[in-house]
Length: 405
Ligand SMILES: O=P(O)(O)OC[C@H]1O[C@](O)(CO)[C@@H](O)[C@@H]1O
Image (cartoon, rainbow, N blue to C red; front, side):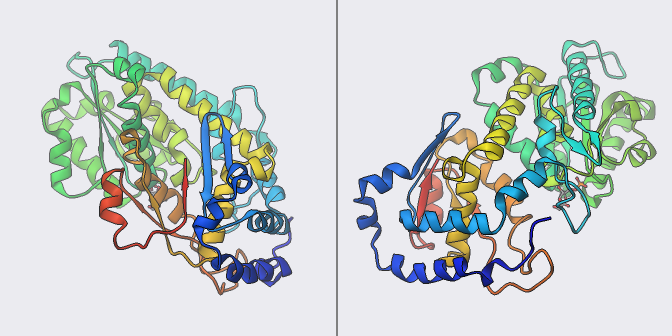
């Protein structure tokens, strides 16, 4: 196990602290005039270009950050995650969302068991079910094709799928495959959200997917009961089995709710809710809307960046670079917030998804061993699509360092 000694007590941390004073004397204009510096601050992988040349940093800063990462045993920690070790020490669980998009023939062990066959068993079940619904082989209680889907869930059981759905809505292939179908998301307990979701839909042609890792989340269960009533009062209580399915790790509670366990799609406690978009949480509703083949491409993209994260050297590793720049900005330069301003409208829901993923993970006030930390460890994320976002958000936040993706 990696040492859990406090990183801020090392000489490397103190050196970076001292470096803050130096770098603050240099204007960004001056940093930008160094062509070599700017060239080395552009890194590309899989068609994604990360340009971090507008960060308040020079080549010395970046080298110091790599050294800090090594001292913190980052490489070893990445390997421990991929090896299925119980790195979630508070819940004593592995952190294996990377297994959700691993190729069928890969081996990822948790407690000595390869979890990839279980993952693909659920993916195959989703492919089969979504194809039957989309083709009309699976029909509602009155024999009509189910062309509309309402996914109920909150937090990680909502924001990831909503983000991907919004992005796919502008993809030509996905648009074609979704023709005549609707996917809606119900998250709020405000009755207006229920009314908006069911507005214009007919229970006879609607499938409801209840998405909850625990199947105990009060808001989700309230909305699930409301839509169960919407279906039962229109079509009779026996219609629930044809019109409601579930995604959960808690199949006992799914059955107790009245959903046929055969129509439940499992995932596992080694998937953190906020990282669950590649599990049935996202794959089921998205496959119902666009077909499994489209969603499989999304999984392949996620798997590709996983491999890059695992094997690329730090200086070419996009996730590592973004993480180190975050540490630099938050813990050393003292910038408390990060604006996420996607200029592609397809990424309209990217900021809320990252808010959940990042802020539910980072910003802890103590170390992994519970020692209070004398510095900030996470930023406040906020954002809106450009060109509107900057107009709204930047005036109050003085311009800070920026990187472009
Ligand atoms: O999927 P569940 O169990 O309904 O929980 C919903 C969400 O609530 C949280 O616990 C808090 O937002 C998230 O981690 C989770 O994604």
